Amino acid sequence: MQKYDFTGVKDIKSELQLHKADYDNIKAKYSDPGTQYAYDVIFSDKYLTNRDVQLACARHLNDLLRIGQDDFPYTYSKQMVDAIEYFCRLLPNPDDTSKNLEPFRWQSFILDSLIGWRNIKSNGTRYTTANISIARKQGKTFLGSALVNFYYFVVCAGATSQDLLVASYDSEHSNKLFNDISLQAKALIKIDDFKEWAEQNDVDPQARQVIAHETKNIIRKGTSEGGGFDSYHNVIAVYDEIGNLKPAKNETLRQITSGQNGINNKMFVKISTAYPDVKVKFKNDQDVTRIAMEQDSKREADEVFQIIYAQDGEAEVFSPELWGKSNPNLQELPEKQSKNLLDSLKVDMEQNEREGTLETFVNKSLNLWSARFHNSFVSLDNINRNIIDSFDIKGRDVFIGFDGSQTNDNSSLGFIFPYEDNGKEMFYISEHSFIPFAQAKTIQAKSKQDGLDYIKLEKLGFCTITNLESGVINKDQIYQWLVGFVAQNNLNVKSVIADPNLAKWFTQMIENYQPSWELLTLAPTSYQLSNPTKDFQDNFINGNMAMLNDPLMIDGLSNAVLKEDAGGAVKIDRQNRTSDHIDTTDALINAHSQAQNYFKNYHEDGYNFMNDLSRDERKKAWATMFGVGR
Image (tube, rainbow, N blue to C red):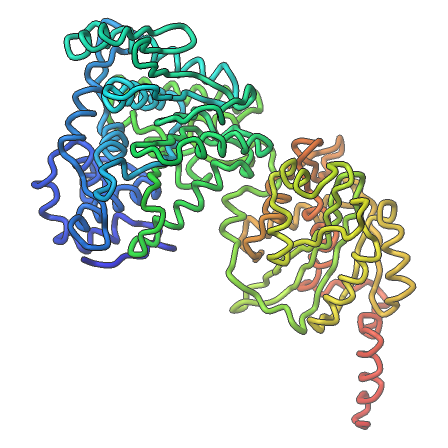
């Protein structure tokens, strides 16, 4: 079969349509709703979908073509698909128990994939992990309740002492999903398919658990706040709204997955909408899995299912005709209901915009990881568009900004290298941070608190952990690192800019030991910072910035929000003053206060070009000025 690598391919659908003949037999051979949906997404105009959905559907179709190959130990079971499709139609609608649920095609694709794909070697599930992300009010609770009850009444029916978990970060969200499961379980034990079995095993749907008193199979609910996940071996665990799980609680996820080791049909289903905080594990899980899925021919992450219904970028926020990408129900509801839902979304957006909470609508109703509409400084979308693979800094002009630390804050150096790319004026930005841990006691605790693996980042060259046992910043370590960095890369330092208050020690060291470096101070006021802050932001939006995929810099840019004073001047601040860091961004804006004029050649009256030269450059100028070389 054709080998694909979708890395960098924006329109996956168009790419596959070039090879439509390879897939002609699939639609006839596989008549299940999930496969029909995947085929229609790629080869018809029936559904408006985003890139992530197209990626999931392409993977499904390509995997069907792989069945039977020696290096592909999976199959797609029609019997299993029929079972989950039949079971779902037995479930009562929690909002109206007199009616049974009928899954939409997009929901069938998820359910059929999770239950239908099997591991030939183990005869168990193929997908042991699932990342499912959808806008709110689209039926993600139905997916969770259907899977848990299917496992309880079908997968675990012949076993004993089976644990099943319904989880979330707090009790409010775990209760919502569990209540639907319990309500549906009460209906299931009364229907002919399960009535006799339920009586024999004394199945009892209670307020806090569903228990079979004879077999001791139990559906429990739990929270990351409450803990205790490590006590059970859950054959299935469904974690609702996992996107709001703070990094400090990531250990609770490891408790769930470690307890599943050795279980043949294990499954960990993570379901959530997007949130403003891009540092959370669920966002990282999505990004890592997406990269693996893009490299289709390599087939990594074969046991992880992922589908994300979201807008393709922040540019689509004000385009209601495209909201079906994040709200798939809009495309499957009857016309009148679909129009009502869209009108409701429009009203919701307008209300949030009036109240200054547009970010809530963007996160929840359009499923975009973004803080931009919370008056953010630089959007994640713009950050990602400016990331490059590499950049050679050796011998270049550089502007250096410094942001000194307070208590638990990191200290950061920001570097801006102006350059031209095919006539386009560009700025390559980088940073190096120095990490204290005195307040957190250990670097591991500091990493957990900030949601950044500083030990790993140090190995990658993005930061240096303080070498003092006390855990406080080592000022000499910062200075020596900077001097070594400049010398090693033969950099031409145009200027060094720092806050005169928090970085007095730094400015004194530069002044005393590096007299050839132009040293400037910049007070951290909106009056002084407004112009470089706005210009830095504009360059990001216009694509004039370039940066590596540096988690520390991305973190600092993502955490920063704009604050405006009474006079209209702006400066950046952090969203969460207790844990969010913007040190790297502060340092870069300090550097940009001078770098912004690099291409403009602004000179005041009485300007003398000799003043812009370093000491060594002036020596060369004197030596060659009148054509006499020596």
